[in-house]
Image (cartoon, rainbow, N blue to C red):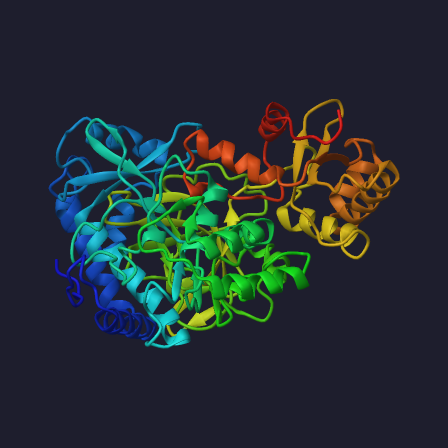
Length: 566
């Protein structure tokens, strides 16, 4: 089964004009898909069947006689990753034709709910025919925004991935994440004009903060117009590194060094150093991104669920700069691709796979869906309602229970506009209080903002006991004493009760302890992220949440020695 093809290009010789045409054409196709998704959806289903029929999975499920979506749903049960794990392990052991006719060439690693990592098989067929095409389509929107003359490595800072050597392997297969991966697999893969830029290259041993600083240094003096990343925390981190290490950066620009060493292709720029030094002297709070890149005009990142709660921080470090969403994408596949200026949601990427939906229940605890659950097709979704996603893509994860929840915000043509609402069941509920990230964020913001300055990072951690309660771990200014801590904690407790009546009722009946503040040293959450990286987590897996669903983070905080007070 052949899907529409794209213009080919050499992975190492992508010109901006080739890239422009390719991205804009892909965006046009995506917009046309919104108007009439039917034919493409049929092609995708037939392609998945072509990949699966001759495999062990296909024979087990009798896919030789399946030709329609209805039969596909009837024949293949809904599965979690743990159900797929035995098939994946057979692939890793070298067995051919287990899930897909096309052989995996690598496995993408991500975290798993069971504690074991998930390894998602990736084939050239899936990478080139689907994921690569999807990336070109979403970048077409960004090209429209900044103009086709600003598409070189001097104009764009792409933080959504890094080119790193495939240093890890399992049974001979390269293992890496979608945000830290090696070279493109072929001409249809994602090959942007900055593919060979020094700032795109990463090192698994490099500390997160140093990686961000290195990019700032290598692009000092460039005309950056666009910054693209997945999680907004990375842009906030970039801005923090610039503010903290501005004097170091100015010195290195004047001397022509990068982290204290001469680097090929990096020359001294005394004029820029003097200009930034003058700015730094006028502004004790440190340099801003727009000081370094005055024509920065567009920021792209996730802007929904917990990422959406970064808006205040993001606006603080990039005031007045336009924000657009990154595609809703994970290790297992792309779900939405933005085609317009909606800040947080895009239409379903109906050309990426077969998508089904199960209405969300109020009591959904995030557990596996019934393998025989009735599902809805995209055209059956209702605006304002939320749904669990069941996804089939050409990587071999067929009718996969992703565990993610999406809310329908309307339609783009014939396709639903979907906003990622978070993981099913993510949050905490000891006694039926059902605390969510939105509850915690709103309560802390209300209690803190305006009284003690800019809201620092925090997270709410369930703490088991008799009765149980919640610990608010929060980066805290050491100059604020015990009285301020007590006042803030009382205000946050009161605000949380106003946000969540169930929480208030459980507090009144003493089934929950009062909220307890755990003040942390400044930059503690950066230290936590570094620890997660050292333990093997990929950058995309390191996500800040405003509430945890267990108390594991308390142990991490204690082991790292982060609390301000014993």
